[in-house]
Length: 134
Image (cartoon, rainbow, N blue to C red):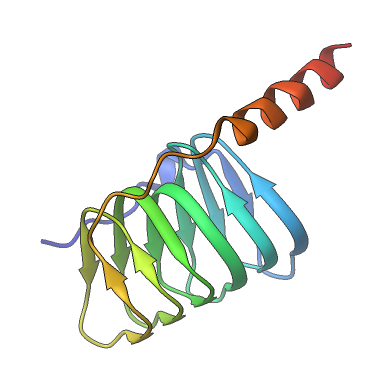
């Protein structure tokens, strides 16, 4: 059964021509159509990697929907769905994984739920929020 992303619920869009280097943290749903190099994190959010996106990052999210190019590891606490013309070079880990015919995947696949993040990461987000308000 093919699960499609719902564009009505995308809270952030990084379009074609956008390039980000560093760490990207988000809530809700984000769609990437540009280039990202670094780390992508969301405790429960959904990451949609569009067909023209090129991502070189360590990814840890709730749900990942991949249609573009990813070089790096993907960990999802809920699921990973991969659709053509996706190209993934790196390991993937999630309790539910769906890879459609026509996808290029070179890496290891583990269907175990990723370990919870250390408390240190949550503390960093709290500190960042305190800086904004103070």
